[in-house]
Image (cartoon, rainbow, N blue to C red; front, top):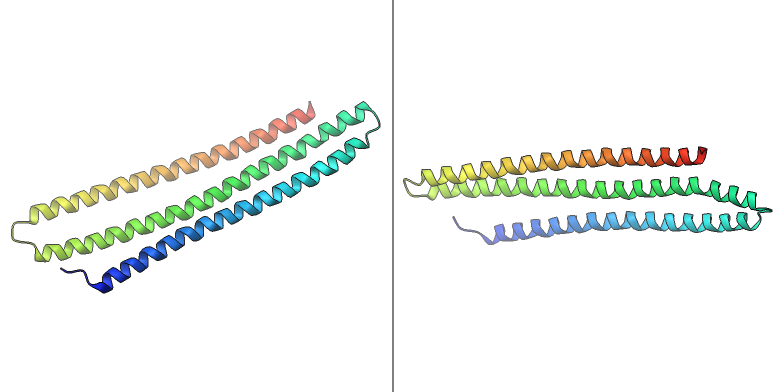
Length: 180
């Protein structure tokens, strides 16, 4: 059971590809966030300019107060939309990283199982107990990882439901303020 230069090269190549994949996912997320921030900043600047012009054209105090009140709802809606977009980018990026991690764990398990099978072939007589113990440890670790993954997915689903509920509450609160 020897490690060949080809195996080392293949492993190194796979690791480089994995790191490039992670870097690409991070860059994509940063690019999305930069575009989102740029768009939000531009929109806020344009709104501010339009609002300032409208306020400057107010003829009396009542019109000024009315204008300020009408500016609040679109600002709240845009803030909610922005927050939702940032959350979506974060969720997508997290999903990509989770898929990557799951793939790497599956590859590691497969490689380790193959290595263990090769070791068993060359193992001395009577080492069955040790091999069985190692296999049981791997099974337990895989079970714990699966449970952790399921719990993380459930937590993500709960968090997403809470974000949706909070968004709806904020919208309803803003609408109630507008009516009042």
